[in-house]
Length: 392
Ligand SMILES: [Zn+2]
Image 1 (cartoon, rainbow, N blue to C red):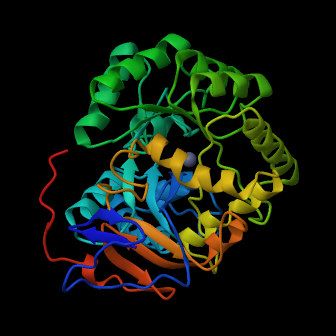
Image 2 (cartoon, rainbow, N blue to C red):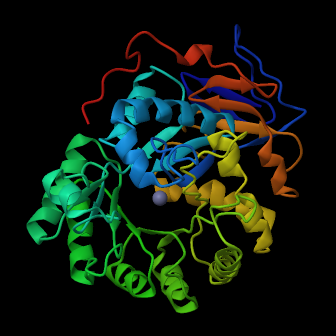
């Protein structure tokens, strides 16, 4: 029995007294599981075959931030319906649509996961784009998809800009371009972010970049392309989180057989080395017929292919996810005093992780969002900021 009052767990045990007038929800035919964490998504980005041939550079040209913010609201609802109660939203969200979404959900305008937004991705000249000179220098087209920071003053100011607007984590492009960031520069990001109480995630795509990021003592590394056995050993020793974004082979066009083979081998290597593993997808594209949540949960295919036991996959999706999100003392575990988030599924995910593909019940902040496999979100919609305004 789990007692919830004012959006928090207040008693848990076999013999909890039911207060008079309490609403009783019977989940005894299901398995109750803590809410899931997606440690790397881009909710305000949805690139697609038509019209942009899956090139997000074109999405950035064709779709304005307000439109993308509305997509983010929808994608957030789709993620919550699949059991993701926390999403780390790691940039590429137009002009801070991720932070608008966080505030809207926290204030109570609409349902959605708890968002841990990074604000703009900070990178050297060009970010991850390769624009023409006219676009890059005359039109400043890299902004706001990337916040260019090439000198130490610009790096400090970029961190402060994101913190000012409401980021909860800082994301940097370690090696998107050959100029990248040095170990000392990554340390500067880490120390400046720390002043605002923020950790730093590095987008890493080369072994050299990974080496610099782990030497600097970064909080988390996104993607697996720079991973090696020796990098994994350092990550385990320094407790650096791995957000490997392991695309399954069934998502045709989003990985290749060679990439997938590498991804599976390195995920297994990371698990063998006891690296703190998070469940992360980078699923920022439209797969016809699937919701954003269904695409994200389908990534368990890769984890199974890597031979990772179901309890360890679930740990990556929950406990380690709360740690990388820094919510472990406020939200995630089903413990007295925590925000009342939980899900329920048919069957036991400790035996068969695939039962998470069909979440039957979702509770967020003590309110029922999904029941009997159907969204029932009415209580989440309000005509004003019922939870109060949030200044940052
Ligand atoms: Zn990403």
